[in-house]
Length: 402
Ligand code: MG
Image (cartoon, rainbow, N blue to C red; front, side, top):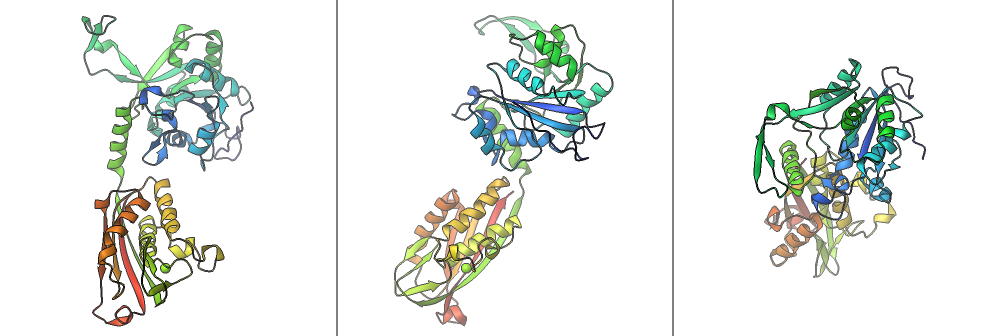
């Protein structure tokens, strides 16, 4: 299957002589150890799929002119969904039955651009830093056949019997390193070594070069560049990402006119009675204020820009979809709604009996706990347009962790 070249900073693969590095991102594993039905590379991590985070780490690197994903047969739809909107990546190619076969397929696919160097990286390491990529490339520039990011072992290493229950010895940990990816290679050497080693069961690519008698140079790895393998790894990664989230507070305000009618909708709850709210959509003034508050927290304009009142498709629309749209925008940026506080200002209808239903409906729309939602009602002591019953106003504050 042919691969598609991606644009370099110079706009053309190979035009920049320094952009001589291709990356094979191996994403063909089933990831069964992490549990769940979805292979781990396609799972969401704070709203962004793991593989999208991993590929993004290489997109835009000035030396990398080609990014080659290798995926499992049948995963095309999962891949497309997980990488929607991500540019600068070649079309994925199908991998093999083992990691080694999948890497080989990726290397063979690079025969046409024939890069000087290739990086081979596991899709399940989404936290790869530019500094680590640069350390690997620096070793290759310095003449190494292969460059391997390694970490020292700080825990004491015990040898155990096959049952794992009995210690049979203690190793000198000073002589051991753990190996990470991206592993860097001269392309011609690693391609030839993979062809020679075909059918083997090597778990990393440096081992294939070692088996061929080539020298592999170590470079300092990065403890942050952890491989997501178990459920605990995912939880730790979520906690780490949460540390980088910052609160954003958005404010929204809206007014709709009252007229006589057969009831009105507030926070998605129908409130029967002799009054109705007038507007282009269902005129849910509370949902409009909350939607604007969420858009405000995102710095993403206002509800009128996203759903113009002049557009006939929003006539009579259920305003739930406006809030759902703003929520999608937030989630696409890894955002989590931490809290919503809305105040509805009117003399009539009396909202006390409906406030709990309104809260529950907001919790359902936003997918968050009830205790993160506040719905309040107040009057203006018969003063002003709300006091005269000419309209209902709503104010909302949304706290978004972004
Ligand atoms: Mg409105």
